[in-house]
Amino acid sequence: MINIDDFKNVTALVIGDLMIDEYLWGSVDRISPEAPVPVVCVEKQSHTLGGAGNVINNLVAMEAKVLAIGTAGTGKAGQMIFEKLESLGIETDGIVSEPQRPTTRKTRVIASNQQVLRIDREIKRNINADTLERLVKIIKDKILQVNLIILSDYDKGLLTKDLVAQTVKLAKKHKVIILADPKSLDFSKYEQVSILTPNKKEASLATNMDIKSEKDLFAAGYKIMDQVKLERLIITCGKDGMVLFEKGKDPYTIESKARQIFDVSGAGDTVISFLGLGLAIGASFKDSAKIANTAAGIVVAKIGTATASIDELREALSD
Image (cartoon, rainbow, N blue to C red; front, side):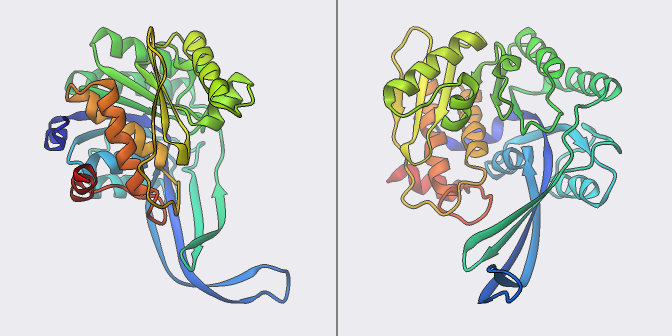
């Protein structure tokens, strides 16, 4: 049985694409005369850390210590990254400013508790050689402080094959668990991470397989395990829960704990966060996945990218 109070003893290094999630909250009472679209009267707006920031928010909600590594642009959204991290009590010495790579900002328009539109402002561009060198040095400086590394890859150009390979090498050298949530379709760059956590769609695209049945899903999982040289893998399946793959064992299915689903934004970030927390305190693969599944069931019942609180998790686990 996992004691969630032990999560506060974890120090996690989160390396990934940091973004700003902007929410415009309002109401709709008419259709535009210019086009058949709703007119949203905006009543308030809010900004939160997005992308890898979702992972950070989940870890902080469990009172784990977080070290963040990534890049930020030099514009307003980039400045907001520093401000949001500082407000969470997280040091920003691991964030490299890159003028040529503006911070991604995703604007979601919410009306009557439903998302009606999303606008993405982003430029996908790989980090340059100087930034790579600086990030690797920061990882080397911080790795002795941590017992968990999470690679939160939104395929914006931060987690290049070279950066991932050097990070995995350092993690293995120092015997630190390293998890990766992939958005890139080239899973080969995650070779030899401790666990990979794609969703079913990502697994389908990466393997070029049409997953329509449990048999298809298992075949895709085995193919990823073989190609990426993995010992363990989780494929998340939305309302159908998740499937665990472990070398030498049969796949194991965990049914979703979600009672209702309003918004799946950030559910994958919740899964990898809680999976990592469980493993970092010494829990088994299966028990860690079960608590990750429970936490994901909490967040998908909320509007917008959300986290599970300690009290919510405790209550869900007692059911």
